[in-house]
Image (cartoon, rainbow, N blue to C red; front, side, top):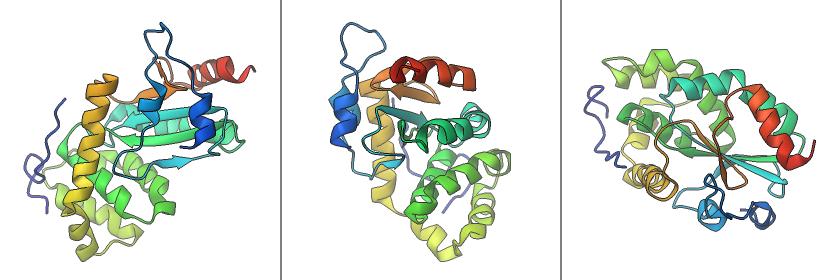
Length: 215
Protein backbone atom coordinates (compact mmCIF):
# COMPACT_ATOMS: atom_id res chain seq x y z
CA UNK A 1 0.00 0.00 0.00
CA UNK A 2 0.95 3.63 -0.39
CA UNK A 3 1.99 5.37 2.79
CA UNK A 4 2.85 8.85 1.58
CA UNK A 5 4.03 10.62 -1.54
CA UNK A 6 7.64 9.81 -0.63
CA UNK A 7 7.35 6.33 0.84
CA UNK A 8 5.14 3.70 -0.67
CA UNK A 9 7.04 1.55 -3.16
CA UNK A 10 10.47 0.01 -2.88
CA UNK A 11 11.37 1.30 -6.35
CA UNK A 12 14.80 2.23 -7.66
CA UNK A 13 14.61 4.93 -10.34
CA UNK A 14 18.23 4.72 -11.52
CA UNK A 15 19.43 5.94 -14.42
CA UNK A 16 6.97 -6.95 -32.97
CA UNK A 17 5.94 -7.37 -35.50
CA UNK A 18 8.48 -8.62 -38.07
CA UNK A 19 7.29 -6.25 -40.77
CA UNK A 20 7.45 -3.28 -38.46
CA UNK A 21 10.97 -4.20 -37.39
CA UNK A 22 12.11 -4.50 -41.00
CA UNK A 23 10.62 -1.09 -41.73
CA UNK A 24 12.72 0.64 -39.11
CA UNK A 25 15.44 2.91 -40.41
CA UNK A 26 19.05 1.76 -40.30
CA UNK A 27 21.24 3.51 -37.75
CA UNK A 28 23.85 4.91 -40.08
CA UNK A 29 25.63 7.96 -38.75
CA UNK A 30 22.48 9.76 -37.61
CA UNK A 31 23.09 11.01 -34.07
CA UNK A 32 19.41 10.44 -33.25
CA UNK A 33 19.34 6.85 -34.50
CA UNK A 34 19.42 3.82 -32.22
CA UNK A 35 19.79 0.12 -32.93
CA UNK A 36 16.41 -0.94 -34.31
CA UNK A 37 16.68 -4.53 -33.10
CA UNK A 38 17.55 -3.36 -29.60
CA UNK A 39 14.70 -0.85 -29.58
CA UNK A 40 12.16 -3.45 -30.65
CA UNK A 41 13.44 -6.16 -28.31
CA UNK A 42 10.62 -7.17 -25.95
CA UNK A 43 11.05 -6.91 -22.21
CA UNK A 44 9.43 -9.00 -19.51
CA UNK A 45 6.14 -7.13 -19.86
CA UNK A 46 3.81 -7.20 -22.87
CA UNK A 47 4.06 -4.27 -25.24
CA UNK A 48 1.12 -1.90 -24.90
CA UNK A 49 0.34 -0.87 -28.44
CA UNK A 50 -2.29 0.10 -30.96
CA UNK A 51 -2.42 0.11 -34.74
CA UNK A 52 -1.43 -2.41 -37.40
CA UNK A 53 1.64 -4.50 -36.64
CA UNK A 54 2.82 -4.08 -40.24
CA UNK A 55 2.32 -0.31 -40.40
CA UNK A 56 5.13 1.42 -42.32
CA UNK A 57 5.98 3.64 -39.34
CA UNK A 58 6.44 2.66 -35.70
CA UNK A 59 6.22 5.38 -33.05
CA UNK A 60 7.42 4.53 -29.54
CA UNK A 61 6.69 6.87 -26.65
CA UNK A 62 8.50 6.61 -23.32
CA UNK A 63 6.34 8.46 -20.85
CA UNK A 64 5.62 9.08 -17.18
CA UNK A 65 2.02 9.35 -16.05
CA UNK A 66 3.02 12.15 -13.67
CA UNK A 67 4.66 14.22 -16.41
CA UNK A 68 2.75 17.42 -17.32
CA UNK A 69 4.26 17.50 -20.83
CA UNK A 70 3.09 13.93 -21.40
CA UNK A 71 -0.40 14.95 -20.28
CA UNK A 72 -0.36 17.87 -22.72
CA UNK A 73 0.62 15.54 -25.56
CA UNK A 74 -2.15 13.10 -24.60
CA UNK A 75 -4.75 15.86 -24.58
CA UNK A 76 -3.66 18.08 -27.46
CA UNK A 77 -1.79 15.87 -29.92
CA UNK A 78 -2.54 12.17 -29.41
CA UNK A 79 -6.15 12.35 -30.70
CA UNK A 80 -4.79 13.70 -34.01
CA UNK A 81 -2.05 11.05 -34.14
CA UNK A 82 -4.59 8.30 -33.51
CA UNK A 83 -7.25 9.48 -35.94
CA UNK A 84 -4.94 10.48 -38.78
CA UNK A 85 -2.19 7.89 -38.58
CA UNK A 86 -2.89 5.00 -36.19
CA UNK A 87 -6.51 4.30 -37.14
CA UNK A 88 -5.68 4.56 -40.85
CA UNK A 89 -2.97 1.89 -40.68
CA UNK A 90 -0.03 4.24 -41.22
CA UNK A 91 1.44 4.08 -37.70
CA UNK A 92 1.95 1.41 -35.08
CA UNK A 93 2.08 3.13 -31.68
CA UNK A 94 3.83 1.61 -28.66
CA UNK A 95 3.59 3.07 -25.16
CA UNK A 96 6.43 2.30 -22.74
CA UNK A 97 6.69 3.14 -19.06
CA UNK A 98 9.35 5.56 -17.88
CA UNK A 99 8.04 6.69 -14.47
CA UNK A 100 9.90 9.65 -13.04
CA UNK A 101 8.76 9.08 -9.48
CA UNK A 102 7.13 6.46 -7.32
CA UNK A 103 3.60 7.81 -7.59
CA UNK A 104 3.81 7.63 -11.39
CA UNK A 105 5.15 4.08 -11.08
CA UNK A 106 2.10 3.11 -9.03
CA UNK A 107 -0.21 4.59 -11.66
CA UNK A 108 1.65 2.66 -14.37
CA UNK A 109 1.10 -0.55 -12.41
CA UNK A 110 -2.61 0.13 -12.06
CA UNK A 111 -2.96 0.83 -15.78
CA UNK A 112 -1.39 -2.54 -16.54
CA UNK A 113 -3.59 -4.32 -13.99
CA UNK A 114 -6.72 -3.18 -15.81
CA UNK A 115 -8.06 -5.38 -18.63
CA UNK A 116 -5.70 -5.03 -21.60
CA UNK A 117 -8.38 -3.54 -23.83
CA UNK A 118 -8.86 -0.80 -21.23
CA UNK A 119 -5.17 0.08 -20.91
CA UNK A 120 -5.22 3.20 -23.07
CA UNK A 121 -8.46 4.34 -21.46
CA UNK A 122 -6.68 4.14 -18.10
CA UNK A 123 -3.74 6.11 -19.47
CA UNK A 124 -6.13 8.81 -20.65
CA UNK A 125 -7.84 8.88 -17.26
CA UNK A 126 -4.57 9.25 -15.35
CA UNK A 127 -3.46 12.12 -17.59
CA UNK A 128 -6.85 13.82 -17.48
CA UNK A 129 -6.92 13.72 -13.66
CA UNK A 130 -3.19 14.14 -13.12
CA UNK A 131 -3.56 17.08 -10.77
CA UNK A 132 -5.88 15.03 -8.55
CA UNK A 133 -3.63 12.05 -7.83
CA UNK A 134 -0.06 13.11 -8.56
CA UNK A 135 0.34 16.14 -6.33
CA UNK A 136 -1.09 14.99 -3.03
CA UNK A 137 0.09 13.93 0.38
CA UNK A 138 -2.17 10.89 0.27
CA UNK A 139 -1.65 9.08 -3.04
CA UNK A 140 -3.29 5.92 -1.70
CA UNK A 141 -6.74 7.43 -1.42
CA UNK A 142 -6.33 9.63 -4.47
CA UNK A 143 -5.39 6.74 -6.74
CA UNK A 144 -7.98 4.37 -5.31
CA UNK A 145 -10.80 6.91 -5.56
CA UNK A 146 -9.87 7.38 -9.21
CA UNK A 147 -9.50 3.76 -10.29
CA UNK A 148 -12.50 2.43 -8.36
CA UNK A 149 -14.56 4.23 -10.99
CA UNK A 150 -13.14 1.78 -13.53
CA UNK A 151 -13.95 -1.37 -11.56
CA UNK A 152 -11.07 -1.75 -9.11
CA UNK A 153 -11.99 -2.92 -5.64
CA UNK A 154 -9.85 -2.18 -2.61
CA UNK A 155 -8.61 -5.76 -2.78
CA UNK A 156 -7.67 -5.68 -6.48
CA UNK A 157 -6.08 -2.24 -5.99
CA UNK A 158 -3.84 -3.46 -3.17
CA UNK A 159 -3.05 -6.73 -4.95
CA UNK A 160 -1.91 -4.82 -8.01
CA UNK A 161 0.41 -2.53 -6.03
CA UNK A 162 1.95 -5.54 -4.27
CA UNK A 163 2.82 -7.25 -7.55
CA UNK A 164 6.61 -7.26 -7.34
CA UNK A 165 7.08 -8.87 -10.76
CA UNK A 166 5.04 -6.10 -12.37
CA UNK A 167 6.99 -3.42 -10.53
CA UNK A 168 10.27 -5.07 -11.49
CA UNK A 169 9.21 -5.12 -15.14
CA UNK A 170 8.31 -1.43 -15.15
CA UNK A 171 11.56 -0.58 -13.37
CA UNK A 172 13.57 -2.63 -15.86
CA UNK A 173 11.87 -0.90 -18.78
CA UNK A 174 12.79 2.47 -17.35
CA UNK A 175 16.37 1.47 -16.59
CA UNK A 176 16.88 0.00 -20.04
CA UNK A 177 15.51 3.15 -21.63
CA UNK A 178 17.94 5.27 -19.65
CA UNK A 179 20.99 3.07 -20.07
CA UNK A 180 20.59 1.79 -23.63
CA UNK A 181 18.71 4.62 -25.33
CA UNK A 182 19.97 7.51 -23.16
CA UNK A 183 16.49 8.71 -22.24
CA UNK A 184 16.66 11.46 -19.64
CA UNK A 185 13.14 12.87 -19.58
CA UNK A 186 9.60 12.43 -20.82
CA UNK A 187 8.01 12.26 -23.20
CA UNK A 188 10.70 10.82 -25.46
CA UNK A 189 9.67 9.59 -28.90
CA UNK A 190 11.31 7.28 -31.39
CA UNK A 191 10.04 7.17 -34.97
CA UNK A 192 11.34 4.21 -36.96
CA UNK A 193 14.27 3.87 -34.55
CA UNK A 194 15.26 7.51 -34.63
CA UNK A 195 14.74 9.84 -31.70
CA UNK A 196 12.22 12.51 -32.68
CA UNK A 197 13.30 15.69 -30.96
CA UNK A 198 10.30 17.63 -32.27
CA UNK A 199 7.15 15.57 -31.83
CA UNK A 200 5.01 17.43 -29.32
CA UNK A 201 2.68 19.49 -31.48
CA UNK A 202 0.31 18.49 -34.28
CA UNK A 203 2.50 20.39 -36.75
CA UNK A 204 5.60 18.54 -35.51
CA UNK A 205 3.88 15.18 -35.81
CA UNK A 206 2.67 15.88 -39.34
CA UNK A 207 6.07 17.14 -40.46
CA UNK A 208 7.96 14.20 -38.95
CA UNK A 209 5.62 11.50 -40.21
CA UNK A 210 5.34 12.99 -43.68
CA UNK A 211 9.08 12.48 -44.11
CA UNK A 212 8.55 8.73 -43.59
CA UNK A 213 5.24 8.36 -45.39
CA UNK A 214 6.10 10.52 -48.38
CA UNK A 215 3.07 12.73 -47.94
